[in-house]
Image (cartoon, rainbow, N blue to C red):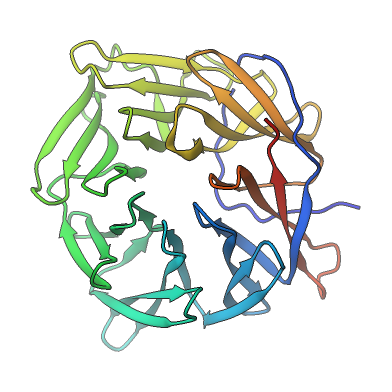
Length: 362
């Protein structure tokens, strides 16, 4: 039997081998009719959320991972992003629609509270130009969440959801922003990487949402830049470190680079390599600590692996090895659990998704 998941994002990369310790066997949390291409879990509890495509409709579903309870929250033709507000079990979600006569894009922001079952509209943003939206990112203290919107004739802006007042407010940036960005743990700073197309220089920038001021945390001249291209920028702001996937012509595969910018006078770049046959699909900081979890595709063995990587110790632990095609893993820190979805599309009339749970072993 072959199970396939829809791709949420793709990238490639590679690392130094160490001890391997497989986690407990994955279990099925629930099955959904159709393709649940995006799955997110709460940072500190057992609730999951997914946009589930069944036919031509997208249904937003929340799931209790302990008992399999499913709640259908909303149906949209053009689903947007979702994120959980930490510590509150509140889901922030977006969806968009286009008013053709006015040539206007509307992006609606709503919240859903799993305890009270209350579903509220908290904001609506309008744009007269083409607009792109990315998944919201929540501050770890639950104070706010952020979503970047880009319109084709103006600088990017960040739409901030303030959880204390259930309101969305725009914050217009004053500089171009790279394709990937991240939010500080307290929700006060935005980090991103920039590449000057003219000079070839590379920067990591820090921007204050409240003050609108910028700081260059890293500056690499073209000659000293460790890579020719960068993607999937992730920040662990408490210990002032970031990571990106990088590509260099002199290497056969992509790499994962760790940047420690606590000491701005002497910036450190640590390169973490994967194996020669391993492509990195997705990564993030585990629980915003010093450990990275990574989903890789071993092209030689034709298997997918979930890894825990300690970049400064140059060690890794293999949590999962499977022939199922996986594209995205979400990590639940409170329960030390990883969630992912596997799509069974062998029968085009009965496409279904299994939401899987993998408890990590100590």
